[in-house]
Amino acid sequence: MINELDRILEEVRKDKDLDKEILIKTLEVALLKAAKNKYGHNSEIEAHFNSELGEVELFQFRNVVKEVKNPKSEISLEESKHLDPDAQIGDSLGIKLNTAEFGRIAAQTAKQVIIQNIREAERENTYQNYKDRKGELVNGIVQRFDRGDIIVNMGKTEAILPSKEQVPREHYRLRDRIKAYILDIKKTTKDPQIVLSRTHTGFIKELFKTEVPEINEGIVTIKAIAREPGIRTKIAVDSTNPDVDPVGACVGTKGARVQNIVQELRGEKIDIVPWSDDPAKFVCNALAPAEILEVILYNDQRAMEIIVPDNQTSLAIGKKGQNVRLAVKLTGWKIDIKSKSEAEGESKTALEKLMQIPGIGETSAQALLNEGYSSPQDIAKAEVEELTKLPGFGEKKAQAIKEAAEEMLHQVNTEESLPDDASLDEP
Image (cartoon, rainbow, N blue to C red):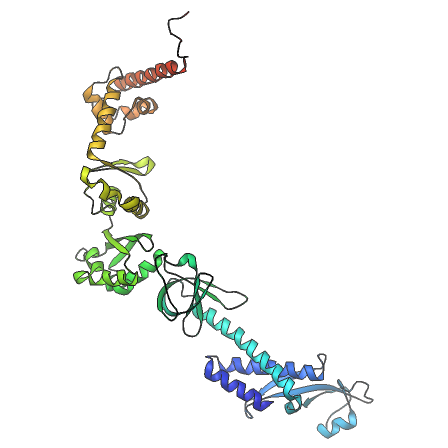
């Protein structure tokens, strides 16, 4: 059996990267299980590695008694004297077992235990090696496909690229090389599950770190990323050094750096825009290359109205709304894009509505419109204190136009509530 176990251990040493102590402990457990299968599970047997002999020794402990009733756990005083001249009744004597007696079945049992324990040790090793590597990029080879998921060979272990973490337009074949982002490490009852992703925004961030030294050095920082995997990505960058252009650093000479990333992403478009603490400026940057004529902020709603030239509307919105959708994700602001003619038309209509309120002329209406008041409803809801902040509006005037707007809305509501054939003059 020792020859069989030695052969197994030799195979393991060649194939697995396991600590010698783990193998010795595994061998002790294996031999102990094989011995108990032969001598009984209630037998008191211990296994110890003898470093001088380079083998695991097994000892069966039996109590020294005057009269033996259970040979498996007891030994007579006379017999014990042959093993240890100093043995006395009541002593526990360790008797070395001949492991060669276990035979083929015992060796097979030991082999199974070794393989099982080695697998457990491998699982633990894999988990320990990868548990702190979330967010890293790794390379592997497509090993097989499992119901839409891709199993990736990473050398000494496997990882899974779930279908939901795959870019829809990307397709792989067996033995294709693949780069991915470590999304998670799960410790399961089977192998530790290393979950990969190619859709996560972290994948983009790590690719830029690889290609742009200034990002690794902390000179250029990635402030935000918005992505529609396989189609388009917007990334906002800033620089801690005023002499370093963050966009230029990411693009690289003749676009070499960003092109390497686009190639890895199999043609996905990438817009690199400068970050700004000014929300309006940042949104304008995010909507590039569209030209922006005017930005109207609604801070309480974290929203903006963006006015663009008539011939730039489609460019600003993008195909199927993609450009503005990504800009919203990138900046965190709601964005409403309008053409210049559309905005002028709405402005003219709003101005006319405001001028219908008694006491409001064209100058006052324009002042109200400039501050975001575009209808009688807006004025009726406003506080008098807010209106007095407008140029040319005193408290008396503000109170008067607020009451006029409220009265105007009341009349409209009253008329709408009357039947079609009714008249206000009827008794």
